[in-house]
Amino acid sequence: MLAAVLLAAACSSGDALTSAPPVTRLSETGAGEMGGPQFSAVIITTDLAVGPNRVVFGLVDREGMPVRPGEAQVNAVFLDPEEKTADVRATSMARFQEWPVGDQGVLTTELSLDKPGFWRLNVEATAADGTAINARGAFQVKGVSDTPAVGQAAPRTVTLTIDTANDLATITSANPPDPDLYRLSVDEALDSGKPLVLVFSTPAFCASATCGPQVEVISQVKEKYQDRANFIHVEVFKDPHLIEGGRPVGGTVPAVTEWNLPTEPWTFVIDGEGRVRAKFEQFTTAQEIEAALLDLL
Image (cartoon, rainbow, N blue to C red; front, side, top):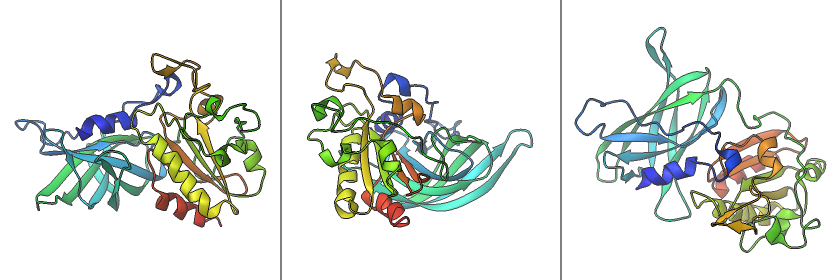
């Protein structure tokens, strides 16, 4: 069921990522109805903070089966428990994005959220059979983002490269790996004066199975812009070739802590001055990444 897949997408892949707060909270609307609400929104994005946000969510019916409208109207409602009010603070259109694995996908939208606290996402759409969809999902907005914020200087992380590894299998679980994504350390790329597209993921051990495809997307964008920007993949796990019980034994790489990543995959687009200009949690299309990069070229 999609609900299970979306829960996996929002979960971490390693011990150092398990500090992420619970992120999937189904709608309370209709809680008193027999069987619960007819439709619910499952919020996937974990790191929502005051300011602009890319919000990723899925829709499921009462049985947990996926509902995939091509687009949906979204209202972000701030919930004030003291005043007992619910105010619509932002509206937008969400678009369906098909995942590159299985028969799955999510809706994504951009929302500017102006207050920390508890919010509700109200979603209106029409199913393929003409059924009207009204769904809700709750989420929390922090005052400050856990991960590097848009406009903030990117951490000057030292990452492993093809020159420091005898075998790429010791620094990436991608199979086969794209050598171009491991030629520079992050700190070296930040010193180059070029924009940087940086993805953190573990292709072989990803809970949502989108991490490998995400790295492939970065390679696709790289083929078009490698003379004007740098592209780096950072494997989440140390020594991904050392495995016991189907999992790496070395823990996560220092970059996970330095970038304070609660989940993966994450993709960052950084300008030539080393400042974060766009960031994407969970699977992101080539079109989204390319659009953010073109703003810097």
